[in-house]
Length: 151
Image 1 (tube, rainbow, N blue to C red):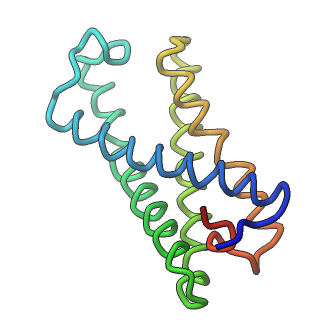
Image 2: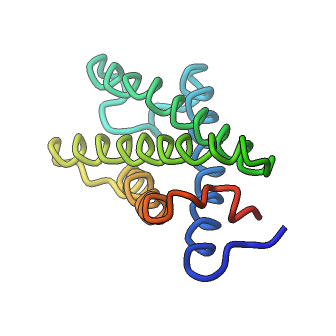
């Protein structure tokens, strides 16, 4: 199991590790949120406002789809066969695009509201930005999918 050489390998290793943390984090966040386990004082501003609650829940499908496609891509990439590797790259690109979109939507929303809480900005900026190097790397070398940089 050799790693992809050079900068491409480093980018994909970082991207994959970030995907695992993010995708599992999305699923945990939504489980905790749907079970109402987050105390209001630790939640976002106006957490109890029904409109903001609806806004937050509007991300469920986006986040879960990003997680499912990401975790599936990583699993297929680890299998290592030519057939699964060919399926992994498009799923990885889709997951990264969905994750970045979720971050962008959240950052745009909080910017429009003029709410600059680091507790919400930092994670959402991470969601927006971490996928970009992976997307660029995968698009530049479409024949070398996620399985090429297995860790």
